[in-house]
Length: 332
Image (tube, rainbow, N blue to C red; front, top):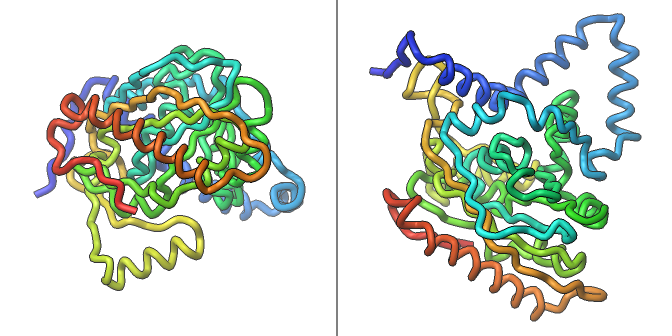
């Protein structure tokens, strides 16, 4: 039998759920809003102009997005963080005269920790790291969705394309990017109690750091994989093959998962209330290389990055991953 939420709950908990629901439902709400507006004939000229502007002229997703500080500082985002709750652990100060590439791990189902820490001020990132201006990067395809694209850009989200990354990193001191390194493939391994990272072949962000002289900051979120129940599939199953086909075609995939609902605790799209501890590690300072980095340079920097990431795991696993089913693994 499903377990339903009590009718009487503190207002604070209702506000926490509302803040999370706002983000979880953003894609559906903005898409439905757009199609509704399309039914109003006198708006058609404006809609056509808007669509042409998106497709032909607007370069904002490749130019760092359009951050609105008032929206990132909205009073609801601390409630978002308190829902789980989420905690930001800072291991070292970051020099605001430098640029940084934050590598966020793991992807989880929808990277809720990355959103809270880097796309809002729910965890007071700007106060904890003064002078650092992060952009959370996501697939270019998200910026082809009317209205939704503008919503996520207001948070400071931008395209994860090479052009976008380099533009941000070269836009002056403090401008930084956050990449959820494992991507869609890692979301298929987001089982509670585990940390299976897709990292061995991820060299793009390593190359970016060398070419731009940007410091790398490994970031590990304990509990990200515990927010949803994942229905894993055998790698030889048809379901897994379909998921891989979708990923190859669109750049994202659809893991089979379950969370909780607004009024029940057993099923739905909302995440479960589980604590998430986001550890922002010590920066790995990188010297800019002229020309294309050599294979040796890439492998050497990748090893330093992985060693620092594993160091974070070893330092905090007995505090923040007490109920783990296994140790951190770099699977591919």
